[in-house]
Image (cartoon, rainbow, N blue to C red; front, side, top):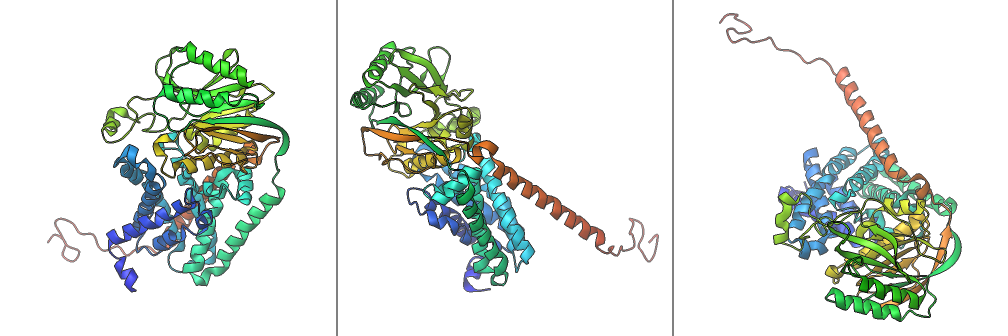
Length: 521
């Protein structure tokens, strides 16, 4: 055993190294945005797991790496959740324990070509299984999906139009597995190189043959970003001022950010009237976001509300997927103590029941989402299916202004646009606001966290249906089938080995009152 291997013999040292190795992929996300490192960031982690002396130790390495990835990906939540972020990291990190055991199973020692070929399919499928489980809203949602690191890479965005962000994740993990084999198992280079060639071939095929959105008319969308302003009255006044400056600019829709209105408009007709006046002056409907206790039903809702020159249009979307701890506390009777150590929700928000497509005039139909709902591929896909020509996410990251969160959030809209073939507007209260065309390319400049402004974007609309909208999460389903097929095949192999093994020699039976040589004694 070499010196480093001897040093790693300590379980605690090994766990620390695994935690750091698991955190490496975080560098591929904004704000570091080193997208290229995603294709090798898993290699140190895979190499460490491969060297584990036992399957149990490999599972621990997977768990520790998952903990590092989860804490690193969500480190900006520390001021809000305090030490509870480490508890969440440990719980979600456990999802990678079976994956660690899988890595060792396929790559330990000098694996055969067949085992490596299987690893190139099974290990990415296992990773997608993890992403699928943690994408459940109750576990925090799909924030930090590995494929979303490629939000600026055009070939990857084309892959997203075929198989969603999941397809990008699958290929990234497959490339990492192939590179890890090239680095650590030189005797098995051929299947590893074949895996890299296959990944390149799939990407090239998607680039050449996947349908591109058909560009149509252009719509003018204004985003109003007031910046960090204390108090709902002062914030409303600033939004009012910025919106009034849009008069005469021939915009088709004006979008305010999340929580842009802190009062229920049904209970405050004076505010509804002021927004209606702005709509008349600018010649465009205004999509605001109300974060308040409703006057017509119990509870606090976050709602996208459309206001026209005649007042409330009746179009309203109540946020369906709430942020755990930020907007509600799961099992509050057990976890309510979190409010004493962080900035968790003092009262649970209520969630809506269905998505809504709104007709905002000028022949334009939009599909609104609120906050981290833009992280869920299925929500934007369903809106596109229902006829939305433009996707909108209203967000606010004012609590996390000096962190990586605003850039990470803004980048997600590029993936949603590419997946659906529909342009997307990411309008925030405090930045970063951004707009993307139907291929996921940026339209205009981002509005940074230091800006208080109203900006107009000429957004090209598009028609046509992407493969992802048509077939949905088929990549995830294929990954699950691969895992099931492997489990069945491996189970049959183990069964055959047991049946073909020679019968063990059975020693003579002993009894309480005798011995094999002298019965009865």
